[in-house]
Amino acid sequence: MSTKVETKVISREDLKKRVGYKAVDDYVHSGMVVGLGTGSTAYYAIERLGQKLREGELHNVVGIPTSTKTELQSKSLNIPLTTLDTHPVVEVAIDGADEVDEKLNLVKGRGGSLLREKLIETEAKKLVIIVDDSKLVQNLGMTGAVPVEVIPFCWKHTMRRLLQLESLAECNVSATIRSEKDSIYVTDNNNYIVDLFVERPIPDISLAGRQISDVVGVVEHGIFLNMADVCLVSGTEGIRVIE
Ligand code: 5RP
Image 1 (cartoon, rainbow, N blue to C red):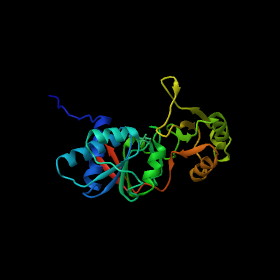
Image 2 (image 1 turned 60 degrees about the vertical axis):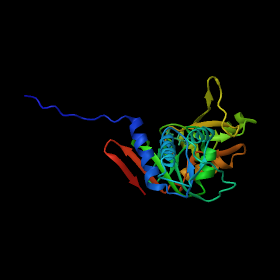
Image 3 (image 1 turned 45 degrees about the vertical axis):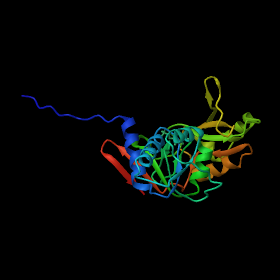
């Protein structure tokens, strides 16, 4: 006689949905101004927010979208929207991340929205990061690009300058201009994105962030240090809260 053990397979999409819904359930209350993140995980938080507003479980919530994509999704769900110009105090912001380290420092922007994300999330009293467990890392910048938003004017020169940074000298750094359908990818702010790739860990991530910002032509980068207050990590065992 054989015993069948049933294991339920949870898809990555399910993990994202669970964590997106939980962030709204636990951190968004009526009357709040909420920063609305961008990406495939933040998508579910916005979906949940729309649902709760529609069903009357939440009221008087206004959202500040971090991208045109998020703005469109929010509008399709009738979520009232505002901007930092009129609502400079953001009670909570919910967003995904590309990488999260043990101190809750982040790499963001592989989805292209890092500038508006940083602008809005810097103002959040509480920044809630929602990820599945594949995003947890020891060293930032090793699983993919560190995105840098640059102005289009002389972007090749700016990219060369980025490759010369002392703080990245030991990392065997390379760079590409982000493209989409055979053209250069253009951000919501009409800028380009230089994706930096390192083969060895960045020795001082804070210094790297400062040096990247100091390059003329750089608008913002995707290294988000000391910004996240809490991270909800979705895995097959459930959702873990890291604070
Ligand atoms: C967009 C971002 C996203 O938050 C990040 O790319 C994570 O996205 P996803 O939840 O789809 O993995 O920074 O600029």
